[in-house]
Amino acid sequence: MTTATVFPAAERFHTAIGWLDSWHSFSFGEHYDPERSEFRSLRVINDDRIAPGGTFGMHGHRDMEIITWVLSGAVEHRDSLGSGGVIRRGDAQRMSAGTGIRHSEANPGARELHLLQIWIEPDRAGHQPSYEQKRIDVDAAPDRWHVIASPDGRDGSLTIHQDAVLRVAVLRPGARLAHDLAPGRHAWIHVARGAVEVDGQALRGGDAVASSDAHAIAITATADAEVLLFDLA
Image (cartoon, rainbow, N blue to C red; front, side):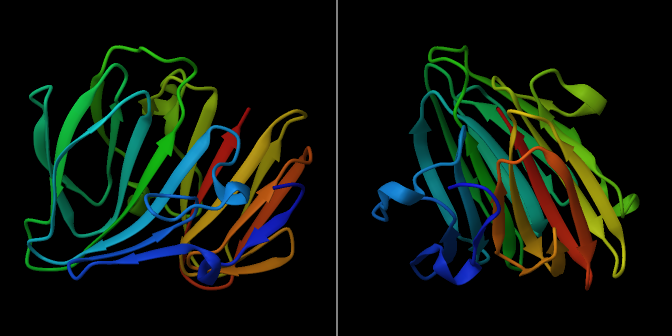
């Protein structure tokens, strides 16, 4: 994965098991491609659609920073730390799996749940497991970046154990945003929905682009859109 590489949505891995329709940006589960296993510390972006009543039963994780971002609907969370509740659109959730955590996720509603589950490798193994949830209402302030996760909790974001910053923007047609990618940094841009141009490349929902050149990344919405930008060491 090198400078300005586009990854079309249709080339993602796909899992469909009745109540779950999931598209994987990187190798996941039974899907494996050594050329598509990660990008820097970014290990997983799963684009999940979960039918009403669909449930990921209690299962375990270790040594991973796991971020859940809801695109529509709501997800009910329970974990072995005693954390629990319903996460809705505009709620950002983070689990640091560390030495071990177990959790379950379910769609408790009457409508389809659409979410992104993101895994970022931590800076080291063996962190203490922890849970964090914050309200970050990106819909209330479109056409600007919102910091969702960072190593220092900047701008009220979730705190992760990695030199990585996740930003999200909801864009109206014609809106333009930029992001200055510093020397030695790397960007992964994932279009969650809608249509945009990134440095002149036309992208639609599910598409992504990776860049490792220091420059001002330019993003223009050609329709209503939502974009995630990972700034990675």
